[in-house]
Amino acid sequence: MNPAVVAPSLLAANHGAFAQGVRTVEEAGLSWLHVDIMDGHFVPNISFGPQVVADLRPLTKLHFDVHLMLTHPDRYIEAFAKAGAERLTVHVEADHDVAQTIAAIKAHGLTAGIAMNPDADPRRVLPYLDSVDLVLCMTVFPGFGGQSFIPSVLDSIRFIAAERSQRGADFRLEVDGGINVETGRRCREAGADTLVAGTAFFKAPDRKAFVNALTA
Ligand code: DX5
Ligand code: ZN
Image (cartoon, rainbow, N blue to C red):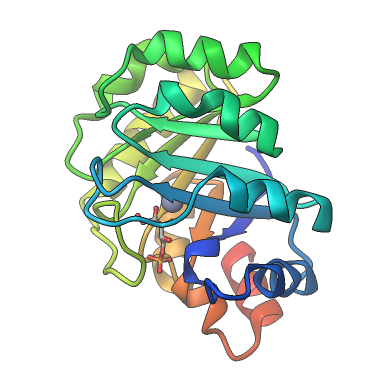
Protein backbone atom coordinates (compact mmCIF):
# COMPACT_ATOMS: atom_id res chain seq x y z
CA MET A 1 0.00 0.00 0.00
CA ASN A 2 1.37 3.41 -0.96
CA PRO A 3 1.66 5.96 1.86
CA ALA A 4 -1.24 8.43 1.82
CA VAL A 5 -0.67 11.70 0.00
CA VAL A 6 -2.83 14.81 0.27
CA ALA A 7 -2.74 16.99 -2.84
CA PRO A 8 -4.42 20.38 -2.36
CA SER A 9 -6.04 21.73 -5.50
CA LEU A 10 -4.79 25.11 -6.63
CA LEU A 11 -8.24 25.71 -8.13
CA ALA A 12 -9.52 26.48 -4.62
CA ALA A 13 -6.79 29.06 -3.92
CA ASN A 14 -7.19 32.77 -4.66
CA HIS A 15 -6.52 33.06 -8.42
CA GLY A 16 -5.04 36.51 -7.92
CA ALA A 17 -2.41 35.13 -5.56
CA PHE A 18 -1.31 31.66 -6.65
CA ALA A 19 2.15 32.09 -5.11
CA GLN A 20 0.49 32.55 -1.73
CA GLY A 21 -1.56 29.39 -2.37
CA VAL A 22 1.66 27.48 -2.98
CA ARG A 23 3.11 28.77 0.30
CA THR A 24 -0.06 27.73 2.12
CA VAL A 25 0.42 24.17 0.85
CA GLU A 26 4.09 24.15 1.85
CA GLU A 27 3.27 25.52 5.30
CA ALA A 28 0.90 22.60 5.85
CA GLY A 29 3.91 20.31 5.40
CA LEU A 30 2.72 18.81 2.11
CA SER A 31 4.71 17.91 -0.98
CA TRP A 32 2.11 17.66 -3.74
CA LEU A 33 0.08 20.35 -5.50
CA HIS A 34 -2.90 19.30 -7.64
CA VAL A 35 -3.22 21.59 -10.66
CA ASP A 36 -6.58 21.57 -12.47
CA ILE A 37 -6.43 22.59 -16.11
CA MET A 38 -9.84 23.20 -17.74
CA ASP A 39 -10.52 24.18 -21.32
CA GLY A 40 -14.18 25.26 -21.21
CA HIS A 41 -14.93 22.46 -23.66
CA PHE A 42 -14.23 19.10 -22.02
CA VAL A 43 -15.70 20.68 -18.88
CA PRO A 44 -17.97 23.75 -18.60
CA ASN A 45 -15.35 25.92 -16.91
CA ILE A 46 -12.01 27.57 -17.72
CA SER A 47 -9.23 27.61 -15.13
CA PHE A 48 -5.70 28.52 -16.24
CA GLY A 49 -2.93 27.22 -18.46
CA PRO A 50 0.74 26.22 -18.64
CA GLN A 51 2.00 29.76 -17.98
CA VAL A 52 0.74 29.57 -14.40
CA VAL A 53 2.60 26.29 -13.94
CA ALA A 54 5.77 27.77 -15.46
CA ASP A 55 5.62 30.85 -13.24
CA LEU A 56 5.08 28.81 -10.08
CA ARG A 57 7.82 26.29 -10.89
CA PRO A 58 10.81 28.37 -9.66
CA LEU A 59 8.97 29.23 -6.44
CA THR A 60 8.58 25.73 -5.05
CA LYS A 61 9.74 22.13 -4.99
CA LEU A 62 6.15 20.86 -4.70
CA HIS A 63 5.34 17.93 -6.99
CA PHE A 64 2.98 19.30 -9.66
CA ASP A 65 0.19 16.76 -10.15
CA VAL A 66 -1.47 18.21 -13.25
CA HIS A 67 -5.03 17.08 -14.05
CA LEU A 68 -5.84 17.85 -17.68
CA MET A 69 -9.58 18.37 -18.24
CA LEU A 70 -9.08 19.03 -21.93
CA THR A 71 -10.79 17.66 -25.03
CA HIS A 72 -7.39 17.30 -26.72
CA PRO A 73 -4.87 16.64 -23.92
CA ASP A 74 -2.35 15.22 -26.40
CA ARG A 75 -1.86 18.70 -27.90
CA TYR A 76 -0.60 20.19 -24.62
CA ILE A 77 1.85 17.62 -23.27
CA GLU A 78 4.92 19.46 -24.47
CA ALA A 79 3.70 22.79 -23.06
CA PHE A 80 3.14 21.32 -19.59
CA ALA A 81 6.40 19.35 -19.69
CA LYS A 82 8.28 22.57 -20.53
CA ALA A 83 6.37 24.43 -17.80
CA GLY A 84 7.73 22.03 -15.18
CA ALA A 85 4.89 19.59 -14.49
CA GLU A 86 6.01 16.23 -13.09
CA ARG A 87 2.83 14.29 -13.62
CA LEU A 88 0.09 14.57 -16.23
CA THR A 89 -3.26 12.85 -15.83
CA VAL A 90 -5.58 12.61 -18.82
CA HIS A 91 -9.21 11.52 -19.09
CA VAL A 92 -10.28 8.29 -20.70
CA GLU A 93 -13.36 10.22 -21.97
CA ALA A 94 -11.35 12.85 -23.88
CA ASP A 95 -10.91 12.87 -27.65
CA HIS A 96 -7.49 11.25 -28.12
CA ASP A 97 -5.68 7.97 -28.54
CA VAL A 98 -5.24 7.29 -24.83
CA ALA A 99 -2.39 4.79 -25.18
CA GLN A 100 -0.51 7.14 -27.48
CA THR A 101 -1.02 10.10 -25.12
CA ILE A 102 0.27 8.08 -22.15
CA ALA A 103 3.32 7.05 -24.21
CA ALA A 104 3.94 10.68 -25.19
CA ILE A 105 3.73 11.84 -21.56
CA LYS A 106 6.32 9.24 -20.57
CA ALA A 107 8.50 10.10 -23.57
CA HIS A 108 8.68 13.64 -22.14
CA GLY A 109 10.05 12.18 -18.90
CA LEU A 110 6.85 12.71 -16.90
CA THR A 111 4.71 10.25 -14.99
CA ALA A 112 1.32 9.51 -16.50
CA GLY A 113 -2.11 9.08 -14.96
CA ILE A 114 -5.47 8.04 -16.33
CA ALA A 115 -8.67 9.68 -15.05
CA MET A 116 -12.31 8.69 -15.31
CA ASN A 117 -15.56 10.47 -14.60
CA PRO A 118 -17.87 9.31 -11.77
CA ASP A 119 -20.24 7.56 -14.19
CA ALA A 120 -17.51 5.71 -16.11
CA ASP A 121 -17.42 1.94 -16.17
CA PRO A 122 -14.08 1.35 -14.41
CA ARG A 123 -13.32 -1.45 -16.88
CA ARG A 124 -12.58 1.31 -19.40
CA VAL A 125 -9.21 1.99 -17.79
CA LEU A 126 -8.10 -1.66 -17.58
CA PRO A 127 -6.12 -1.53 -20.85
CA TYR A 128 -3.94 1.26 -19.42
CA LEU A 129 -3.26 -0.01 -15.89
CA ASP A 130 0.11 -1.46 -16.77
CA SER A 131 1.37 1.77 -18.32
CA VAL A 132 0.31 4.42 -15.78
CA ASP A 133 1.57 5.51 -12.36
CA LEU A 134 -1.78 6.80 -11.19
CA VAL A 135 -5.49 6.15 -11.67
CA LEU A 136 -7.79 9.04 -10.83
CA CYS A 137 -11.37 8.20 -9.88
CA MET A 138 -13.30 11.47 -10.06
CA THR A 139 -15.66 11.67 -7.11
CA VAL A 140 -17.55 14.61 -8.66
CA PHE A 141 -18.20 15.51 -12.30
CA PRO A 142 -15.16 17.59 -13.19
CA GLY A 143 -15.43 21.31 -13.80
CA PHE A 144 -15.89 23.00 -10.45
CA GLY A 145 -14.60 22.88 -6.92
CA GLY A 146 -16.95 22.76 -3.96
CA GLN A 147 -19.27 20.01 -5.19
CA SER A 148 -20.60 17.09 -3.16
CA PHE A 149 -18.87 13.70 -3.13
CA ILE A 150 -20.64 11.01 -5.20
CA PRO A 151 -20.64 7.83 -3.05
CA SER A 152 -21.29 5.39 -5.91
CA VAL A 153 -17.67 5.97 -7.03
CA LEU A 154 -16.57 3.93 -4.00
CA ASP A 155 -17.44 0.80 -6.01
CA SER A 156 -15.10 1.88 -8.82
CA ILE A 157 -12.35 2.60 -6.31
CA ARG A 158 -12.74 -0.90 -4.83
CA PHE A 159 -12.71 -2.40 -8.32
CA ILE A 160 -9.49 -0.61 -9.30
CA ALA A 161 -7.86 -1.39 -5.94
CA ALA A 162 -8.68 -5.09 -6.43
CA GLU A 163 -7.16 -5.01 -9.92
CA ARG A 164 -4.08 -3.35 -8.51
CA SER A 165 -3.47 -6.04 -5.93
CA GLN A 166 -4.31 -8.82 -8.37
CA ARG A 167 -1.67 -7.50 -10.77
CA GLY A 168 0.83 -6.78 -8.01
CA ALA A 169 0.89 -3.23 -9.36
CA ASP A 170 1.73 -0.13 -7.35
CA PHE A 171 0.11 2.73 -9.23
CA ARG A 172 -1.43 5.40 -7.05
CA LEU A 173 -5.20 5.51 -6.71
CA GLU A 174 -6.31 9.11 -6.51
CA VAL A 175 -9.70 10.60 -5.67
CA ASP A 176 -10.74 14.13 -6.52
CA GLY A 177 -13.88 16.08 -5.67
CA GLY A 178 -15.78 16.68 -2.45
CA ILE A 179 -13.00 15.19 -0.33
CA ASN A 180 -13.17 16.05 3.36
CA VAL A 181 -12.21 14.07 6.48
CA GLU A 182 -15.28 11.84 6.28
CA THR A 183 -15.35 11.19 2.51
CA GLY A 184 -11.56 10.86 2.48
CA ARG A 185 -11.75 8.13 5.11
CA ARG A 186 -14.31 6.22 3.04
CA CYS A 187 -12.11 6.49 -0.06
CA ARG A 188 -9.06 5.27 1.81
CA GLU A 189 -11.02 2.32 3.19
CA ALA A 190 -11.96 1.52 -0.42
CA GLY A 191 -8.28 1.57 -1.46
CA ALA A 192 -7.48 5.17 -2.45
CA ASP A 193 -4.08 6.49 -1.33
CA THR A 194 -3.95 9.94 -2.94
CA LEU A 195 -6.51 12.50 -1.86
CA VAL A 196 -7.11 15.75 -3.72
CA ALA A 197 -8.72 18.38 -1.53
CA GLY A 198 -9.56 21.87 -2.72
CA THR A 199 -12.24 23.63 -0.74
CA ALA A 200 -11.83 21.54 2.43
CA PHE A 201 -8.08 22.22 2.53
CA PHE A 202 -8.06 25.95 1.79
CA LYS A 203 -11.06 26.63 4.06
CA ALA A 204 -9.82 24.50 6.95
CA PRO A 205 -9.27 26.60 10.09
CA ASP A 206 -6.27 24.40 10.99
CA ARG A 207 -4.80 22.92 7.80
CA LYS A 208 -2.21 20.72 9.51
CA ALA A 209 -4.92 19.18 11.67
CA PHE A 210 -7.04 18.64 8.55
CA VAL A 211 -4.17 16.86 6.79
CA ASN A 212 -3.44 14.74 9.87
CA ALA A 213 -7.08 13.71 10.06
CA LEU A 214 -7.13 12.82 6.35
CA THR A 215 -4.01 10.69 6.57
CA ALA A 216 -4.64 9.11 10.01
C1 DX5 B 1 -12.88 19.35 -10.18
C2 DX5 B 1 -11.39 19.37 -9.94
C3 DX5 B 1 -11.02 19.18 -8.52
C4 DX5 B 1 -11.50 20.27 -7.61
C5 DX5 B 1 -11.70 19.66 -6.26
O1 DX5 B 1 -13.11 19.42 -11.52
O2 DX5 B 1 -10.76 18.31 -10.68
O3 DX5 B 1 -9.62 18.99 -8.36
O4 DX5 B 1 -10.63 21.34 -7.53
O5 DX5 B 1 -12.26 20.62 -5.45
P1 DX5 B 1 -13.07 20.29 -4.12
O6 DX5 B 1 -12.10 19.60 -3.19
O7 DX5 B 1 -13.49 21.63 -3.65
O8 DX5 B 1 -14.22 19.38 -4.49
ZN1 ZN C 1 -8.59 17.69 -10.30
